[in-house]
Length: 364
Image (cartoon, rainbow, N blue to C red; front, top):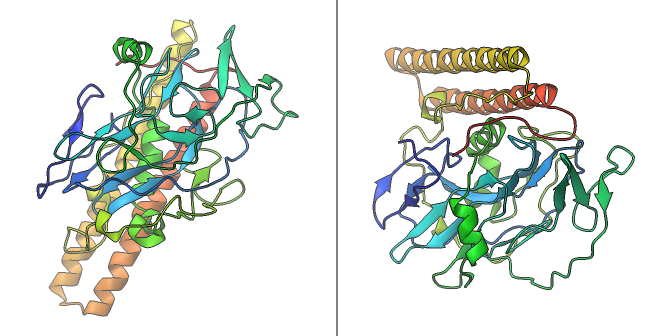
């Protein structure tokens, strides 16, 4: 079921409904009456280049319960836009996911202290100035050898609360200001395709499930979307609070116990930046369309391959050990494909991006 940002994902007690949304970064709901784990403690990777903005990590919900989507550096869909993080909030009967979005102003994000400039209200990590983004070095990890658009403004952040949800028992008690409410009504852009890929890749990685890492994910932040290994990947230093196993379903809902390619939500077609040159814009969009079609073909090919292997295993009455090996292989294949697709999208977006800022996109 595809949802727009304006709609919220309501998760009802004892209701088993899996809902994937490219607009809300593939949030999934099932019987959530307890909030997500505390936000882990981690270090921000070095900003890869000018124009990238920090998107903090967050807990999402999937077939295995809560899982961590690593924070990462992302190019915005247009110059002048800022990221308002998504947040979980108590809706009176269950927890509701409020999806993040890009906009000219920072909106309400539940009063959650995501760190690195997102300290519960507004954003003090940087600002736009004449089409270029300037970084506040006191809250960002910036290499001034490569990035010169920097300034230093001391930020007093005495809050040590790492609660990751608003309202309910033990949640953050914060309400939107008039300015934050106005930002909600302003022109908004949904998450970019690389952000969607980042969450899809996290969804397929067992290490990122709270049931596996107990609130301390081994991949807490990445230098770019999809870069889940190698230089710059940061592991959580510690969990943000005591882990509560009741936050997660005791077992995966599908009998196979693994996420296959067919279980993934549909990919989001990338939007080319707007350069002001119609011919160049069309060229860039053609490149985005070509990549989208290529990745969709690879996705469907893997779906067919995995389905065929399941049928063949059933026909020859394969034993449990062989089936387990097959499922592990399928899970690895799915994860590798999602990571590769995220990297391809990131590389194309970076190549098309004008120096120092974002490009086009469709307002929400």
